[in-house]
Image (tube, rainbow, N blue to C red; front, side):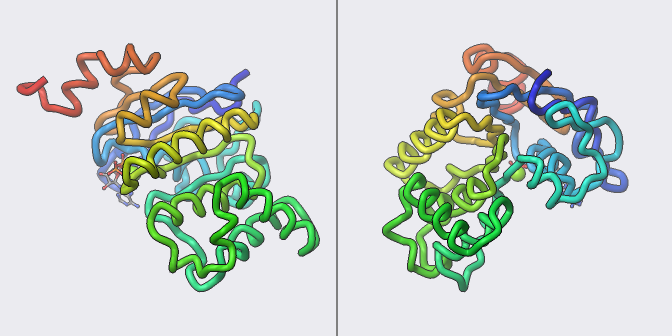
Length: 239
Ligand SMILES: Nc1ncnc2c1ncn2[C@@H]1O[C@H](COP(=O)(O)OP(=O)(O)OP(=O)(O)O)[C@@H](O)[C@H]1O
Ligand SMILES: [Mg+2]
C-alpha cells in the first residue's frame, strides 16, 4: 500500500475541468515530482489533497484511509503538511513565532512548541533569523520559512508547491540540499516545480500532467525524454 493514493481524481470549477481523472501514488520515503505547464492543474491537485477544495469525483487515500470530505486541519493532523505557491507567513509575527504556532499541531505546551521550533529552524538554516519579523525576510528566507512551518507539523508526507521559484543559483542549491535532508529524515515529498535542475536532481519518480490530464510518468530520464512532455512544454511545432 502506498502512503498517498490519488485515484481517478477529477476536479471541476463550474464549466472548467482543472483535473481530469488523474491517478498516481507516493510511497513512503519517496520524492515524487508533479510537473506540467502553467495552468495544468498542479496546485489544484494539492488543494484537493488537503481538501481546500471538495473533489468532484475519484478518491484520495492516505495510509490506506480515504480522506475525502475531511477538514483541512484533520488532514494536517493525519500527517500531510503543505507549503503554498504564494507564501503565506504570519507577516507581523517573528520567524520563531511562525514556526512555534505550527508546532502546536502536535505538542501541548509553549515550552515544547518553542523547543521544536528551534530544532526545525536550525534544520532549515533559519536559526539566525528567528527574531526577525517574517515580512522582513527576503524571498529565499520566506520560502524556507514556509517549509519550516510545514515541517513543524511533523508531516509523514510534505507537499511542496514551487518552493524553488524566484531563488538565485546559490539559494537553489540550498533548497535542493534541504529537500534531500527532509527525505533522509524519513518524510515522503510530493513536489510541484518548474525548475528542471531541481526536478532532475531530487525526484525518484515524475508524474506529468497537461490540461488536467496525465501525459507521462516514470523516472526523471524517462519523463524528460517523453515526446508528449516535450510537446506540452514547447508546443508541437517546436518540440
Ligand atoms: N478556485 C478556482 N476557481 C476557478 N478556477 C480555478 C480555481 N483554481 C484554479 N482554477 C483553474 O484551474 C486550472 C488549473 O490551475 P492550477 O492553479 O491548478 O494550475 P497549476 O498547474 O498550479 O499552474 P501554475 O504552474 O501556473 O501554478 C487553471 O485553468 C485555473 O485557472
Ligand atoms: Mg500552481
